[in-house]
Image (cartoon, rainbow, N blue to C red):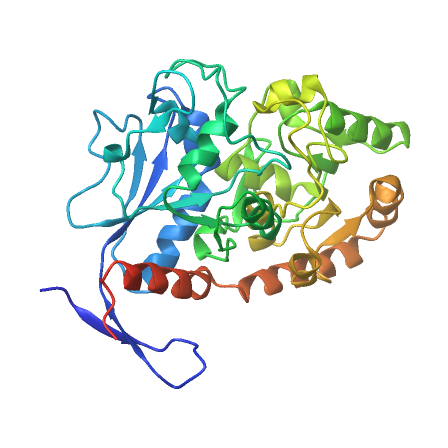
Length: 377
């Protein structure tokens, strides 16, 4: 017999809902046993979602699923939130035309939680689908769209949700919230010794993220303006967890840059992202997965314009937004104002802490459990 809890729920009335203490696991879909990149990229997201579920009273595990066919990724009696659902495109079958996902590989009531950018134009069909298991990702978008339309879908970005709705796919907007799991230790190791955070900042401007032609041009413009920019990815170094915390704590400014420019991509850019040319536009997507760990640890962020007006407004005063043509000027201004940087960074941390992950998950989790007869009114 499941345990029943009474939790207050913000509705138009004073009604309270009875929640069954249902186990909800967070399943991260990997592209195979060697896919450490997905595991590292989604670790903070998975731990944040798990923490939010546990704070709502739901037992929760994180499962890294390397193979949906042979692994036991979905334990009996649980409900499941699936991260990295774009990787499900590897599990298609079909003879020409629009291939179909073998739905028996997923629980029918699973939630797919998307954190990938949704292209501006995404084809519903393709007659040239690649064989399952191959590394050619050029047509993954057609497959992914079909999958997303077949299950309950959450998306962290308002812009993504609007694009999906234009293609006839409904999604709940579920942004990523604050969790204490995102905080680093107050002591960081750098240069072979233990430092207190902000003991010194020897990196002027830091950018961490995939290298694309658009980002290369942006960084080049900053350097041409005399600004020193450290971009570890361009040197073949990916930073996650403690290493990310150490380097970001040593940085006066952490940049958030759009991967693509304008409404379309070039052929070169599409290859680096796995999309078709002209599919991606990068101005509207909110970048919270990139910003969450920075905000939680009080880092000073200068960001290119991204997200909707309402998404940016939530962090007004805690993140400095600048159009591309003023990015160099903005960085130069704040490089020489450490007190102002610290004040804004602290405001960003406090603002983020107001958006608790448990509070964000409460309503969509409740709706989903109610739809599948786990919630009794």
